[in-house]
Length: 73
Length: 208
Image (cartoon, rainbow over all chains, first blue to last red; front, side, top):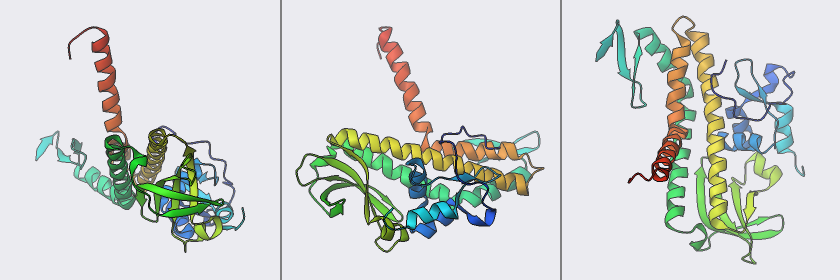
């Protein structure tokens, strides 16, 4: 597994969502029209709840991403 | 080229040599190539962070002239200095019209789906002391960079284990991790050690 110390908050995203409903950080950034740094920052500010792939990479459930593109949140 | 026990020592791009066999070297290259665009972005952001910290140290961040105006939550914020330019957004230190409050504000591209739903600008931090606010924001950026680094290493690890399970993937990932860590953190760690060391010597009355 990842040998880096875990520097992030516990991941509470819906990991039960199938992989096809999970986006990588780069894919999420592209969908939102922001950069990947901003996606990581949004996660750290609890604006979106991430998940983690079996390999340990951060993923974002499509349902979570939708929260960021809904007007009048 | 140095050799040790049949292995080749090569500079792997972080200023230090690692002893790799040809196959390990191939694993390293492949895994690193998989994260190269993000690694380069990480490097650029860290360089910009260093630049704005140097500039802030030389000149108070709120002493710059007024620039762009942002409307956030009904308040017209005036930018004083740009702290960071990201590929798809910019971060500014801003002052409100009353000249009392300061805020770190991120401006997004107006046509982006995120901006359409959340507005073109978002307040990240608020305060009334420019230097302190800039320091707090710099600390947040460093934290985010470490988070990015952790994810990059996880990605490199996946590639190394999936494609090169027989080529010492743990060693390959350690080398990549070290290279990423150097971009975001080693300097601070070394400076921290120097500072502790200096304090100790000063406390012991040793002339430095």
